[in-house]
Image (tube, rainbow, N blue to C red; front, side):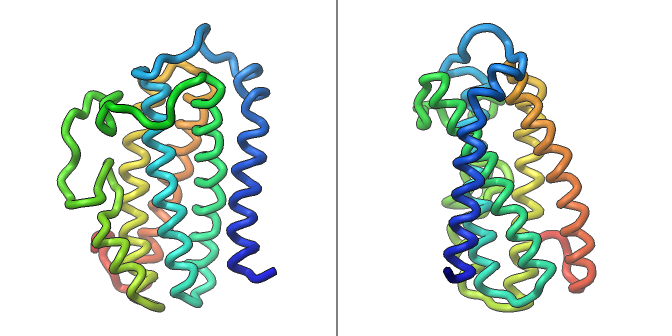
Length: 207
């Protein structure tokens, strides 16, 4: 098995394991009584963060194929594995609640954000890279790809922290609120790590 296939398989397996543990997590997690509605913060966060996480996984695969730097590849692997796992949990919750994974509501409506952030086509939610950003990342190699990935992922994590904090404040299901808090803690730590990595490469946090 190639390293590429092995990595993808590992991420998929992590997501399946997470999804398989959902029933136990909800049963033991002490969530609020009742099932969330399609318009609830719980459902909105699950839908939006699943999309947000998918882009992080995509960017991590892109840089993995464009750098030989062990430190960057390890970080990208960790982010891809973690966020694929969490995405499986979020989508699994929607299945358990019998709610659609696509909503007519605009992204971030559950946080009271009725207009999309500026940033161009493809920037659906806070911190997400644009289509142009992804195309550029896919066209670069080695050090330039590393720097752009770290810059884009820093912004991505900052947006993710903002969204997860919104769930901590608004969601009602205990297990989901705890997952959101773990996202806040882990992504803040990775933001600091990426800041150090950018400094070592003589680059600023933003592209």
